[in-house]
Length: 192
Image 1 (cartoon, rainbow, N blue to C red):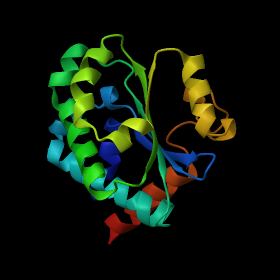
Image 2: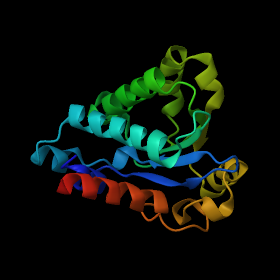
Image 3: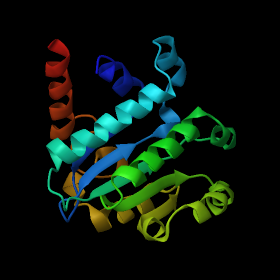
């Protein structure tokens, strides 16, 4: 995976500690994805989807190999614009969600969609009928408000495991033991 470092620098997504029931926690910030920079290096949406698949495999083979393992997925939409819902970032999120649903349908524990803009309900009402009922029950949508988001995360994750970006007391995103393990794993593979 020769582009792993470049992708990690331009697509904010992080493995980050555990939830209260030992779930793997994964944070993603799609609006902060720098597609222009990635494309300059020849990385298109299909390459990002391959990277996403590699991240999923890493999670379920290295971080949580147990067949019963679950995840807490935090999708931060801070900064997303209405026009973004017609673009590549949303295409990527749709295709990544489809991949996860097809290959890891029972792995999702809770999905937090945070910092959603006021108009998000219009989009959600269009998308919601396409989401299966089991998954719908796992999704918690939260508008802006650091305290409300922090309180919601605290229901599922101990404050010591929540990153400071979201009001917690752990190390910042990108510095967790899981992120270090991920980087070292691919650094070693890329040297071969």
